Length: 630
Image 1 (cartoon, rainbow, N blue to C red):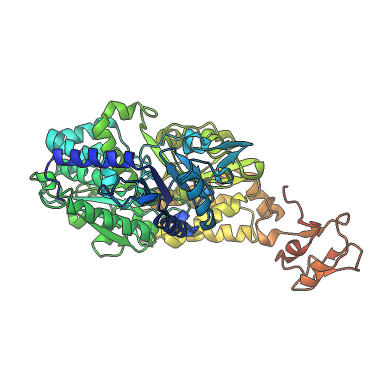
Image 2 (cartoon, rainbow, N blue to C red):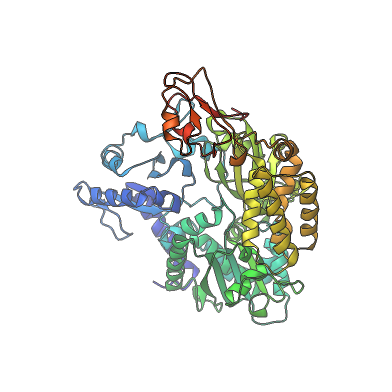
């Protein structure tokens, strides 16, 4: 049904909200990419089969379901965020969260919880001896402030009416019927919403620059090209609550009088693309997109453009060039995107999370938004928490939350209770934070002073067994391969830096290597064409500053204290632990291990190829890497 006015929108909202509340049980099965890869599609199928064969319940497919008996809604939701514990199943209205669910657990969940109001204790989350029946009680969730991610995991990601029931498109109705475009720009600028894509540029100011242009044709573009290793914030929003970001895009279009928009999504996100297509089609069918939105004179079309996976297309001018069908490469500025962006027309370009914040600001006001987080960086920020941390997943916290709170209160601390060593923030474009930075506030200004940046929001936590030189080499290898090659400083400078780092981790470091890296980094940062090139050396610079001793050990002592760099490993056999079983010798591919049965064996380092087969095959744990920290 096409929605022609605000009253009809409110009628659908009230009717669907009442229906959702009236459903006896809602089974929300995480159908985000992470849980799907863990088998959640089979869990959905099993739950549907159980409900279909149960005479006690009626499956809820929509508001028209009969209420002669208990109704059970079985839904595919977006990412719940607690990826470490997936696949996840949430049972409403009680808010019960079951973790690491398998298809064979479904019958017990259905019989005990859905039909009998009993808990399946073994599937509940446990931490430090405490069992948490509901999602809201789990420390991972309790210590977050989920605003952008509020609906992710709580609604059917493929049903627009569930989004409307949760307040979807109310902000759009407000701007269309109660506000002028200029008032929308004023409100967003007053809120001080800063771009969540990494640069932290003031969103309202960018919109105002586009609105001021004399060109009558203008575009709105959403950057969903999330290319940082370990980052999946935008993907989860697109998969779990696509209507929130679409609503924000439409509001931006109204504010700057744009008639057409594009969502640029990397092709490696097939599920996000599928759900965006579905969401756009549903919005068009109901008159929330397309011609005469909500019966007004405002019209706006939205398209999806798939990127081929080039990291450089996260840069604005390269992204717009890619949409135009050209090779994705940045250009010299000015003119800026706000003046000459897509098809050389004024263009608003923000990322997924930025747009998803807009509807909340419209409904709640600028003061509400500024009351969250520090004055200079208000609101919340979604982070992808990965690496050597107990609770990996997608989180959302107020800007200004300390790194310590994120890692220890939400993340549960370091895996295996190891010592925290560092965190790489902002992906290849970010920097390295260490022990002394645990109390730093995660906001744009605080991190900039430290020489780091939020970037898109990736947080890769590392413990003492991580080699920081290898971390720098990994990120430099990534940025060097992803360099578009247009400017010499980035194309040649990153290649030279990578050559030096590869030589260092290969045990062939030379005196002066650190000085050369620093010189090259300074040159690239000051002369590269685009922001991606300018930030490429940051992981190397920050690790050299924080861990100079590790670089010196690699270069001068040919030693990797973490035992990660293969060429620097020296395997030794502990004579006290060795039982002389000969299993290591029998599995050595180069016959570098010698000895007599029932007597300690030895390793000939001159023959050893450092493959680690001996460690894997020793049943007594007698073989280790010499000098490795334990």
